[in-house]
Length: 222
Image (cartoon, rainbow, N blue to C red; front, side, top):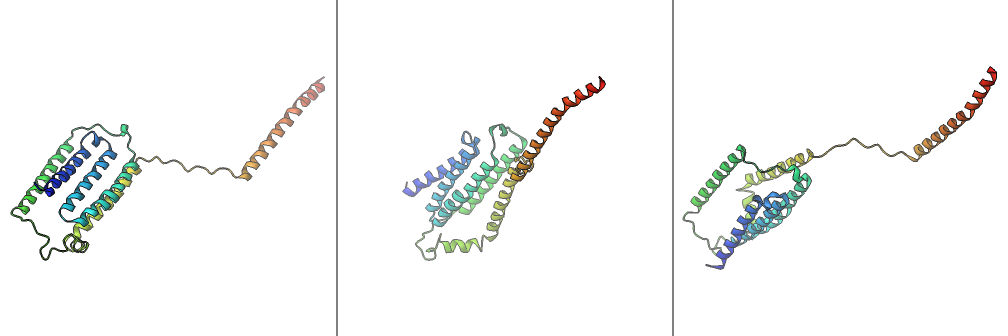
């Protein structure tokens, strides 16, 4: 077994294990732990790209996906701020069973297509003429904006819709309050203080004259 094969099994096994840890407990119970497992899986995939001499794709895998996209996902998870009492216990429902069946069907089709496409394929020597630019920025950019232009644009729209949907889900959990009243100004405070002082003086004057009036009334009766 060559060194390249050993690295392939290590990187491939690590990618599969990190992907499984993203969904299965105990790490799968926490959204943050699932996001970290997905980041680890991206790093293993970058190593697989490097083994295929696609160094640009490996670098983009780390910079774009493990960096920018996962930072966005992490911020969205923190924005949702799901508490343990808000998460439901895992239950087997008809929708989950149907999703599992469809996922198994899609995986089976992918494996079949890859197996048929790779049947009889031979390894390519990159030292041969015509393969000197394999994996370079120019070659990848040319294929991305010619042969794979439509999938590239669809993925960009998908990321935009996912970001908008995450914001909408987060806004449902926000509690809006009435607009708070501004604090009183210095003039209003002084006016209120003078009003209270005047009111208190009036009350004291009324209390002073009230017994006098009562005595005068009693004297008039006598």
